[in-house]
Structures are given as C-alpha cells and as structure tokens.
Image (tube, rainbow, N blue to C red; front, side, top):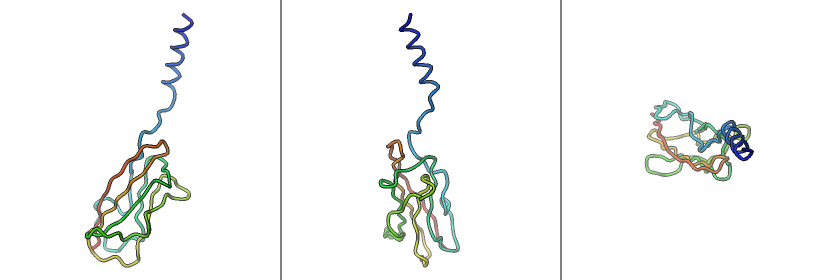
Length: 120
C-alpha cells in the first residue's frame, strides 16, 4: 500500500510539473513573411516562442542569386533571448530575399526554416 501511495504521489507530481517546451518556433518577424517592401529594412528580426542558445543560432539573408547580404550570421538579442536578428546594408537592390534561420532552444532542440520578402 505504501508503494502504491508513493507511486500515485509521484504521478501526481509529474502531472503538476510544467511541461518543457520541446522546440523554439517563430512567432513573428520583421519584415513579415512574404512582405513586399518599398524601402529596404535596416535589419531582419525573427521572434521565437522560447529562449535561444546564442552560440548555435543563426540568421542569414540571401539575395535571389543565393549570395549572403546581411552582416554576419545574426545574433540573439542582448535583452531578449527569444529574438534573432541581423543587420542589412543600407542599399539593397530591388528583388527577392530569402531569410534562413536555424536555432537551438535552451532545452537543446533544433529547429530551422526560411521565408522570403521582396523589395520593390
């Protein structure tokens, strides 16, 4: 009986514990996914639903020819560890741009994806 009560208590404790997030997924971005812009953005920013590991998270912007146009591989925000951002040059040519992100959440899970925006 004592073993049963301990097992029941353990199960109740597990059920009451908060669930850990399994992955970090984007919640929104600037520019928005699929946006058509008339002015070049100063940066690309992607916000996630969980904190990211800065060393293992990247954000790269490429032009239609597949050449990187951003400054580096992006960085996690200093004050907001759920933000991944990279600066862009002041003068981007009109065209389609692809944003590639790859992140490791604090729990160690990897997610990646991409989206496009167009500059007219």
